[in-house]
Length: 311
Ligand SMILES: [Zn+2]
Image (cartoon, rainbow, N blue to C red; front, side):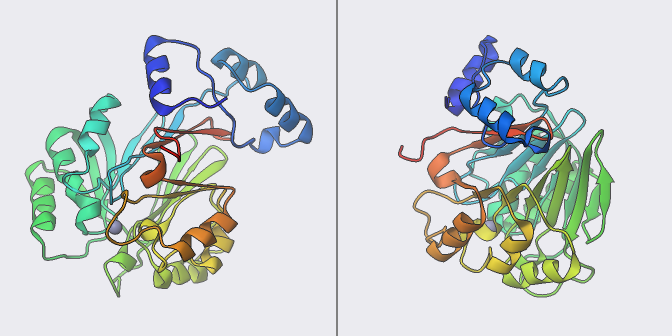
């Protein structure tokens, strides 16, 4: 049984028992028996979840916020709230954060200085308590980038240049690793994107900003293990990203493409979409599905969207 995103929000606020559809059965429940059990008896309330997994509360949330053409990803765990990119200035990220009751954000990552990633972060710095900022430390000569730097300065937000190999433990069972860029990043701004892998429980999330083929090849040649449960596909589903070689390493179960409806770039490009669809169990798109919410207990997860594909 599938419910819409807003039904879920309403139900949650009203304290109504929620129904969830299980898209993935994690390692602990990996037997055919349990698979059959879940398929036959969709989980219908928190109590049932808890009876099956004693500590199975869905405490992790990943919000792929529909900001039109741009990226904005909110990761929430019991110990940390993190925002990776904020869409454009006009993408509506703050409206979404307000709707979610967010007041403080521990970590903000601006993956690279393009306006569709950092534009919305300016209002985030102005309106929320932000603990610290990471970005690739590369320069872009635009007013938006200037305003972004000025806001970090004005609100005295601690700033770290993200570099390959940095690791942070973010409370129990959550770990953040910066996979890219290396020292002295070369090439395009897209290929300077901060790439972050977050592990939570037994699952993982790979956020690649606008990384393109060159950057993907560098990741492959640097890291033995890129496997990630959930992939935010690079550069809005452009054909220049999501190469087969890269996807073969990541082996995503769920891939998410973040792009605007009828955007001027034609994202996602057909070739990239086909590669993502063949490499992933499921592909979600903000242009078709709106906001995409993944909730997890660290070994299983549900996916809820604010729009049906056909809407
Ligand atoms: Zn972009």
